[in-house]
Each structure stands twice: as C-alpha cells, then as structure tokens.
Length: 131
Image (cartoon, rainbow, N blue to C red; front, side, top):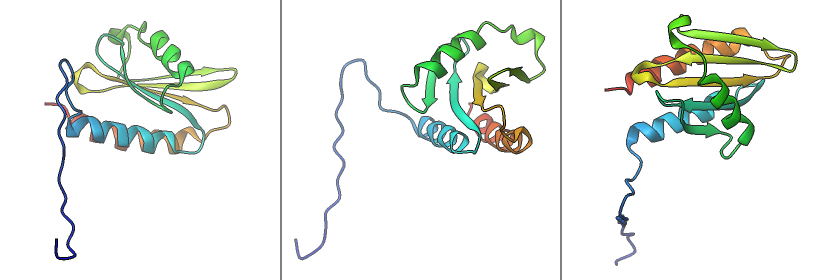
C-alpha cells in the first residue's frame, strides 16, 4: 500500500434497523453538551408521544422515569418552557419543533440563568434540525 492508509466504511444492514441519521448524531451531541453544564444532572429528549428518544447520561432510569412524568403535562397549558421547582431539584421542560420535548433535571444549587442560556442555544439548534 505504499505507506498510505486506506479508509473504508463497512455498512451492515439488519432487517428493521436503520442507522442513525446526521440529525440524530447532532441531537445526541447537543444533549451531551447540556448534560455537561454545571448543575445539570440529566437530560432527556422525548418524541411527541412522550417516548424517550435519547437520555444523557445514557441508560439513566431516573431520567427516563422523569420523562414519563413530564409527558403527562398538557402542552396546551404551557408557553414553550415550564420550570418545576422541587425540594430536591429543578426540572426544566422545553417544547421543540416537531412535537419533541427536552427535559433537564438540575440540582437545587444550580445556576438556572446560565443553564437557561445554554438551553436557549440548544433549543434553536435542535429546532433547525426539524424538517
């Protein structure tokens, strides 16, 4: 090979499985960026039916259970973002285009102003991914 590397991609097609799209990779990256913020303990992205599409950290049952509870909120009663303050933390729920919902779980002592700024940026980026 004359000292050069050959790069190739192997595509495996499994019945009933579609590889993630570029938009899904971007959604995962944005969720990871939000979860990396100081004071954020979990992030979930829900579809229009309340099913969990992604969580960060992955396989965090507490975030998935929280997402199920948030899915019960009536979207007609919200104005795009809902903040739930509780004794042991804060939950931010952000409506997105495409009937998706972004849910953040934060520590009691977290800087919600800073987190909301990151959430605003992520919201606009996630909304641009919708067809």
